[in-house]
Image 1: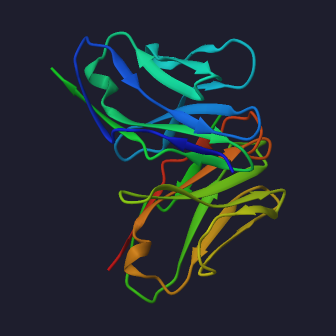
Image 2: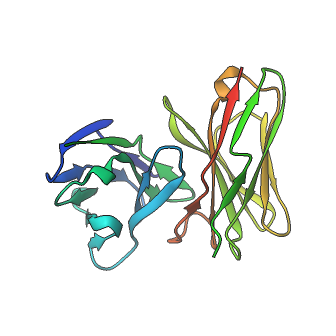
Image 3: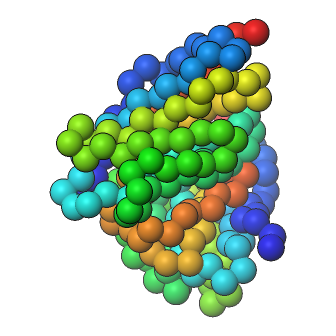
Length: 110
Length: 115
C-alpha cells in the first residue's frame, strides 16, 4: 500500500525566507503525488500534483515541488515566504485511495 | 462551476445519538470520498463511492456507513456516537476513481462535536 511521510509537524519560517517542506513516499507502482493546503476552518485545496512527465512541478501561490524517484521524495518549496502562507500542508500519494501524510503546520514569523 | 458543498457545517450531538452528513459533489463528478480529520490521527480515509457503489473502505467500525444517490450526492451516517468521533469530516469529489491522476476537490467539511 502507498504511504507518505512528512517530518516535523510544525515548521517556522521567517517572512521572506525559503519554505521547504519534505515529503517521502512509498509506492509499489509509479506514484501520483499531490500537495494540498488547508487554511483554518476550510477544506483542502490543491497546490500542485505530479503524474508523469516533467519532474519539476509548479503550482499556485508560487509553490513548486520536484519529484525525485531515486530519493522517493516530493519536497515542496517556495523561495520567499509570505504571511498568507501560514496554513497546514499535506502531501499525498494516490493508489487505490489517496493516502495523506500527517501534515506540516507552517508558521510565518514577521 | 460550484464547488463541493457539505451540510451542515457544524453539528453538536451527544453520545449514543446518530448523525447524517451530506455532501454534494462538483457537477459531473461521479466519485465521492469521505475522510475523518482529527489532531491526533490526521486525515483518515473512510470510504469512496463511485456510481452509487462503495468502491473502497477504510479501517473504521461498522458504525460508519455511507451511500451515494443517482445524482452522485452522498451521505455518511455515524450511529451510536462516541466522544472519539468528534472530528472534521471532509468529503472530496473527482470525475474518476480516487486512484487515478484526477484531483480530488474537497468541501469545507462538517465539524462534528460529540458531548
